[in-house]
Amino acid sequence: MEITSDYLIIGSGIAGLSLAIKAAQRGTVSIVTKKETMDTSTNYAQGGIASVLDPEDSLEFHIADTIASGAGLCNEEIVRMVVTNGPDLIRELISLGVNFSHNRTQTDRLDLAREGGHSRRRIVHTKDLTGQEVEGCLIQNAEKNNRIRIYENHMAIDLITTSKFIKRGISTNETEETCWGAYVLDVTTGEVKTFLARITVLATGGAGKVYLYTSNPDIATGDGVAIGYRAGAKVANMEFVQFHPTCLYHTRAKNFLISEAVRGEGGRLLDRRGNHFMERYHPLKDLALRDIVARSVDAELKKSGDECVYLDISHRPRNFIKNRFPNIYARCLELNINITQEPIPVVPAAHYMCGGLLTDKYSRTNIGNLYAIGEVACTGLHGANRLASNSLLEALVFAKSAFEDSTRMISDRSDHKFPPVPLWDLGSATDSDESVVVSHNWDEVRRLMWNYVGIVRTDKRLIRAKRRIEVIQQEIKKYYWDFIITSDLLELRNLATAAELIVASATMRKESRGLHYNLDYPEQDDKNWRHDTII
View 1 (cartoon, rainbow, N blue to C red):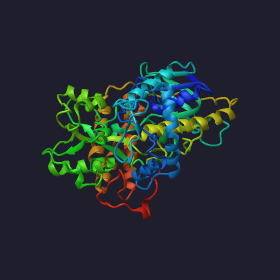
View 2 (view 1 turned 120 degrees about the vertical axis):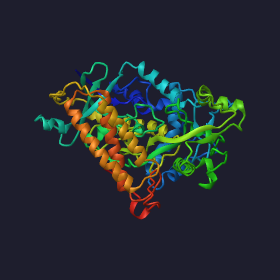
View 3 (view 1 turned 90 degrees about the vertical axis):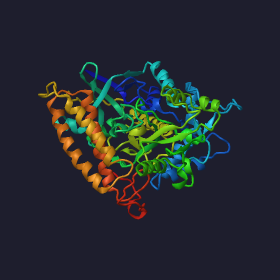
View 4 (view 1 turned 30 degrees about the vertical axis):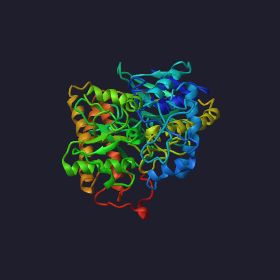
């Protein structure tokens, strides 16, 4: 089956949906999402969106905080662009129907929270369910637009690019590598469909599931980075994996994050004996940047042998806690943890990819007609460490820039016909009766990444990880070509590629900076390494 549209957007989080709603003003849009539309990392975002909306705040303060967090690798032009666009895009979300929390005493003003690394209160939120509120509202706007069609349970396999035509002996008018869409697996039927588009956008989110412990939903398997990389897109800064310092530690809790905002509202980290420890690691104590707090927690756990530390906000008024953090309060109470009376057991977990497909300020990759937005992209905003709540802001701003740039391209090529696309070739692939191979390799990749390429690294650990991933990649490649593809196999293939890129980037950087900490090179080396790691 062949499906054509002006835009093909792969991913249905805040980045993809924001772009889709704008793009529908100018053309038809196909959104491909591998699960249900709501099943995105955006939906799980608790904290909020950073933006300058307080008279006591300023754009320059937000810019300075972002650059300080990025440990010397932020692109100041990009930082300024993102921060400056923030207030208008928050107002745009409100016009679409997003209901942000308002100040309880000044009801005409938004309630602005503060999180680690921010010098002012500037986090717009909907209590601790911000992502769910934003995602739900964007879905409603997209679903009622007759120029947008959403394909749930559809997973992109590979991009359709000029080189694929050349390999098949098909001539095109393109002189440079250009993207014309993607081959997509209908997970429900097993059919591979051809999606053709004038503009293709990767908005697939991050790769947290490459690690054994993560705050990310199961969908975060590095699909967009892997798909883009296989097509020839440049990848940057994959060594900078942000580990959130406070994920709920409980046998019945999976991927549940305890928001940064808990510390922003006065929550303090304790060891098992009830001692505060962050003052030993940084002057900002519990409000230090995430990389510092995560490494501090990791050091405490390694020193004590304990399984977790604790986050205590029970000293704040009971009604304040229940009103400000209703989701966290309810989930913890289900597990017999009353956060108004006792501390929360927490551990670090993989949370956010600061690296990804290298893009310019218009969200363009190095492949023609191919854009990347959201967590899948490396835009220059985050540098070596993302400032809390800048991620949803980045997604909004680059959805806007991608729309503005792609609109010009569509106008210039309005009469351009699609080239004759080669059909998906099943070859001699057969159904597999050994799915245990997929599950075993999946588990092994995640464990070796956690043990060897985690919060703290060494050259020896990285070498071990590289050798093992090479072997796993060979097994996956053989399996991929021998058997009919499934969503599980595609996710494993992408997960292993993302892991390979993280290891390669981490091996290249011979220093410690931001989220990359190597015991063999514990100091930041601006002379030799103040630049992006590009593969």
